[in-house]
Each structure stands twice: as C-alpha cells, then as structure tokens.
Length: 561
Image 1 (tube, rainbow, N blue to C red):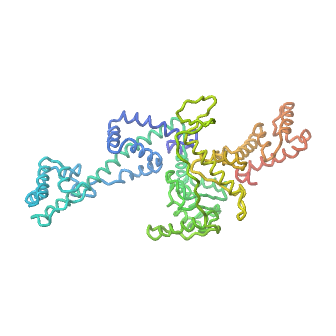
Image 2: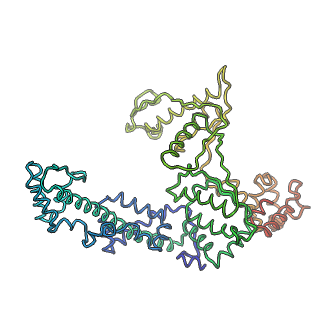
C-alpha cells in the first residue's frame, strides 16, 4: 500500500491491460488545461504554428508512450538539461536574448564588410554590400543573412581580389555562428515548450487513471522496480519470489524495455557476487537483438547486451550462440550473411557470426498473374455493376472492388497450393499440414481459407484470442477456482467437462440430479462414491489431493505436480 501511495496509484484498482481507451479520453482533459493556462496555450500555439498540429500531437503521443522514462528523467532534472541553451555553445552570444540580435545592432565588423563589398568593381558584389548596409541600418537580421549567405545557408563566393576580403570572410563566419546559434535556440525553445506540454499531458493522464482507479502495465513495472529497489522491501519481495520461482525463462528478451530489466536485475543481483545468498533460480534468457522490432513499445536491444554480461559475470552463467536455423532456405541465409557482414565491416555492428541452415533447398520466388484493377464487376447475369450502382440490397450483396480483387487473388493462390499438393510425376506433392501461408494482415487470410475449403483442402487460421481467453486456459482457471472455492459448482462442471476429466453430458446430468436431491455441493458429492456412476469413481479423491497441493505449494508447482 505504501508503494502505491508513493507512486500516486489507487489502492483499489483495475488493471488496464490496453491503455488505448484512456489515451483517447485524456486529450479532452489536456485541451481543457491548455485553455485555462495562458502560458501552456502559448506553448501549444507556438509549436503548432512551427510544426503543425499533426506533428505536435504525434510528438506528445510519443511522450505518452515513454511516460515512465520521461517521469524518471524529469525527476532527476535530465529533461530540462537535455538540450543546451545557445549561450552554452556560443559564449560570445550569451549576452543576447536571441542570437539574431547580434545582427540587428551596429557592428563594426559587419559595417566594414559592407564597405569592402561596396567598393568592389563587380556589380553583384557591390550590390550585396549595399544590401548588407541597408539591412544593418534597418536592423534586419534576415537581410544580413541574405547578403552574406546563399539560400541554402552557405557563404557566398566573393572575389579574392576584393580589398578587405578577409573582413568579409570574418563577417561571414560571424553570420554562420549566429545562424547555428539561432538553430540551437530554436531546438532549445521547442524542447522546453514540448517538455512543459508533456508534463501537463502526463499529469492529466495520471489524474484520469486515478479518478477511474486504473493502473496500467507501466504502473505495474514502476511498482515492481520500486519494491525491488527498496532496501527494506526488496528482501521481503525476494523471499516471496524465492518461494514461488525456481526456474526463470524469458523468451524474446530483445523486446525487454529498460525499466523491466532494471526491476529484473534488482531481483537477480541479490544472487550474484560475493554477497550472493545462494539458492538462485535457474535463469534462461533467449533472444536476438537483430529481431528487436518493438521499439515503439519501449523495447531496447541494448538491454539484451547488458543482460548477457550480467548473466555471465554476476550469475556465472554460460553464453550460448545459435547460428543454425531450420526455417530458411539457403538463399535467404546467404543474403542475411552478406548483409550482416557488410554491417559489421562498415556500420560497426558487433557480435554477428555467419549463419547456417538445415535446409538444402535454394528457395524460390514465384509470382501470380496480375489482376487488373477495375471499378466494376459483373453480377450473376453478366451485367457490369459499379460500387455506386443501384442494387436491391435485399437480394444483391454489396461487393467493393478491393474485396473482389482480394477474392480473385485468393483463388489464384488456392489453385497454386492445390497444384503444390497434387505434385507432378517428377515431384511428389506436399501434405497440407506442411504448407503455411503468411500475410501482413489477418483479413487477407480469410478469403484464402474460403478458397482452399472450396477446393476441399483443409485450412485453419490461428484464432486471434488472448491467452487468458483460450479454452484450455479457462479450463485450468475453472479447476483452480473450484479447488480454492469448493462450492462453485459451475466451475467444477466446466473442469469435469474439459479434457482433464472428459466427462460427458450424461454424467453431469446425473451429478446435477444428485445435487438437487441432497442440496450438497458437487465437490462433496464426488467424495460419496456409493452414489456415483462407475465413470466418476475416484474423482473426489483426485480433487482432494489436488486441493491439498494447492494449499501447500505455489500455484505453478501445484499444477506441475
């Protein structure tokens, strides 16, 4: 509770696994704050004027993605110091509020440069001298830049024979430094404005979650890191973890973010070095930094490198490298080796070793015939019908051209797969179970499955289901529920109907009839073997034994037993 209060999190909370609804709701609150705060409103309007609203909101959304890192850096005053003011880089200009002010007042160097150019014999050079003098007289900094620099910001080329050309070159150097200082000032100003806006946005996001009693996964990571990093709480937490976890395996470790690794290393550090307590769990980390594709989820490949060193040095572990694949054809592996070798030679990529493959096939690349793009299709009578044509919606379904093209493409792919399965006199066919079709979008696989089934080829698409919603997991949850609460007949019914016990409807009906006559929970009825059919004999003893395990062992060990 103290940790939750320290992190300003609600004590009674609901875990927000998907923060998209909260992110959508926070913007109205954020804009309300802008309207009420003149300085924040000015910051927002200035950034929008310079970069547009889309880019501004995109940058604020990125800050919301990295809210934990931003908050931790801000607490250490890192955010404000991330971009240095122009005066730190250009001390000679630090007396000005804006670097361009150096070009607006009387400057002996710039006046001398204007006079030198004005005396030049070339008309273009003398014209620039006049232009520079007029700009200095008017205090026009942009005019000074235009007189001495090109449109791309590089020094203009003046003749070397001009009397006083060195003065002109010095003036150009000054203008270049002012231009660089101005860019630095614009970057600093943008960063400061965005930091203030990000603080307001994150404060409203935190207030929204607190009002709704929400806790997101970032909050869970922060709480874990806080507990494991606390000198008082860490010992208690580690003791609890020691009792529950004997083996720690993390797959796809390259997608771990720094905060997760900080919490994990705080725990595992207690087992390492001279002060290690012994009895450490076995640690197995699997990953490949080359496959880190979740930077948008705060993943950082450098964490994998740090974890490698930690496991070897602190835990005395082994580093195993697998450079052999069973997935890819030789052509793919050869290409990977070529690209990564070039990255090692020219881009400084370290740690790559040439890969090999178990496949002896070179691989192939095929192409289906193109499908012409057409804005019309033919109905069942052969009449051309466009997407906007009138149709009887009760009898004629709407077919969009894109959907029609996708269907035709799927039929082509299904026909090709059918030929692959049938084989040739020289090449035996493949069983359907050895063929996998991949697509960028799940929607593209639905018409392909229909086309394959139309050809009587078995096809299956993996269900897009959360792990906790899978039938197998729900069966286990139901079993655990009844072992903890034996009066939950419905959970027991699901567990008995599952493959764990594989009882049929007749057995469940018989048990329900007994329940009605004796008003006794199903769990207790299963202990009275004299009233049970033969198929349910012994189930009560099994459940009692499992209940005892669950009361004595951690859940994982109880399930494993």
